[in-house]
Length: 269
Image (cartoon, rainbow, N blue to C red):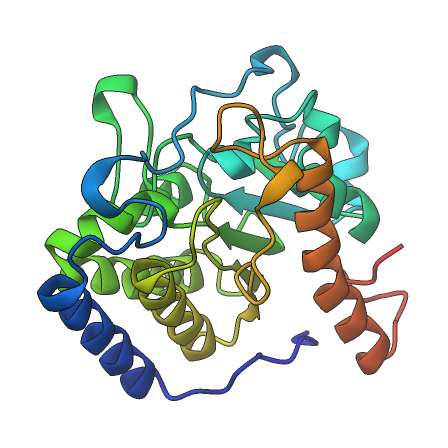
């Protein structure tokens, strides 16, 4: 069933070691350098309220007869994946990707969360908790996106964040052993600094370790300029469309390389 090629192919230990070295250098010598937009604490990491479209929440796998035909794609992430900043749920990048790939979207993302960052006071779940909120073996694709809300934790305790990333992907593989995993790396509307690079390296390594398809939003940086909303943090409809285009470029290219098969659950439209 596996059809997607892993991008990068870098050994996990090498990448995590590199990421650790980057963070050590960041802590010892970064000083006033803007790192991922959070240097000096002047700019908050992406935060978001619960989905602004609560009445139009994503369907459960058993919500309609279509679920029996379309593969179910679970989206785990933060406010970017919730779609905060988009004009409607139809305009968020996860929904655009699901529509083009012929997937039924199950979006459980929570604003202000990450691999380790959680917001219990707002009843928001971090990524492992989001994965645990969905019944085992109930989805066909798992998309794990973001991580920028962990930048602050990365500066304080990089080991905990790196372990959190690795544990999240291991949990996804255990809970949904037959599902394809798609890894959409962290993004930032600010300078792509050491924090962003370190976390992105850890995500890339975890994705490689579990045979996931990795997609970078930093090379080149996609969230910038007019694609950033007036709040200076979240993405506009155009920004969501650009993220969707970046993700689809990899997924659909892999479809073409593998040769589309009607019986394969990952055949795109």
